[in-house]
Length: 605
Image 1: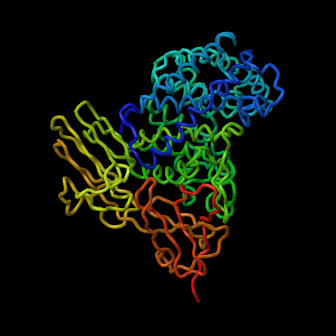
Image 2: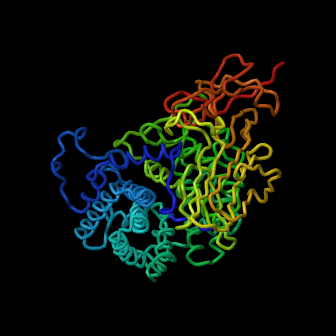
Image 3: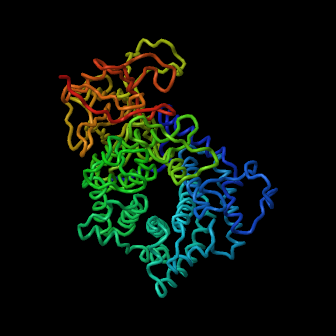
């Protein structure tokens, strides 16, 4: 098994992912404390200043949309905010966010006391009476899960002890409620979009060893989806994606907490049903609306509501669990594709706002949320998504004294007091402060990557570099400027086993254009450069003339100097030998432009 390094050991360096993370951090700081806490205040009977009577809702300093006091999901976002802020506190030692987080946790504790000592919800307890009576209510356990997970992260990453005390009081409430439901209506425990609760209780049992968390995990560990998976059934097709994926997280966490291989098997069976037994779009995502698409039907469901972002984020989390369990690079490949074509593509690069879905039909436009008037579920997963990059880059294989590179993202890893490992794109940046360097090799590709290992004293370990399947041909690898003539790649990795002092490894991944088609519409073709989906800047599918298996017969690369993330334009193409010229850019670079991902492939007569 691989061990995920701690958040405190890794921080991002300048580059594409850090820029997106910084936009996200600015949004976390911009949201005011009162707006974040408004629904907890209302539930606790606290009147916010100037809001005893709201004469002008448009001018009221409140959060609306799914956070509005009239919405049954109100308060879900604060848990996500706590999770995201906590991770930035850990990775960046962010004192501003730490101060804001601590105040918010203290206010939640104040609300708990006013609610009678146990209840920490932004929604009323009587919503759970509706579950007991089998009456309709919109996902109260979903809302509570977000609050619990946010507090758990505040304790683990931001070292806030009060957060754990709050969860402990809430767990006592859940012990009483679940015990009562065992007598009155056992089904109620498995209602209200409850899937994430198993992971929370298992995590708390793993951290604290307290019996009450083991009991709660047990009470949430018998959903029907587990029986279906064990019986070899398809529990997903036409079912709600984001209600199902958290159960796989719970199974994975139960395996970590207990060591029982049954739980790992359930997580792997879920992966098989979700990923191996059905196709995905070229982006790596799935779904129509919020539902799983059946095998072989992706083209039929191509539209405005593909790839809900919550599902992208949660499937990446599942892939991360399975990557740690197995070390199989296939999971890292999956994560990589979804980082570029989900995490980045569904975040507005200027405002940090999410798009709920990623439209795939010809002539699509992304619909962005507003700062305070929407708060769809994907707001929460988006603010978290932009904080987990550091946790995906490095993994430790302690049995082999091996450091595994999971993702190629500019960052620095403090492995120990002795060893620091950093990686970055190996290009000259003008903001480096130098306009000429005699050692600059004028590299222009994002896939030239440099690793620097600094050691105060020599130390032996294996640095294991993941070689992506999209690499075309043999990667070029240099160790201290000496080329590795015949790199041996085994199970998707190239291992460098040496005594490290102060060393530099340069690696180049040759990349070329590839295509991806829909299973039920094989004539519909999308273009990719490595893991990056390219989108044509046009408002319709005007068709592409292309020789079979030769995407470079239809597109040619475009290179020019820039003053943005990369000094040279990356992953940009234009059509050749077509009826009209179309520019293709990374899907993640598109903000408000109309775009088309899948084009009808045509052959010349």
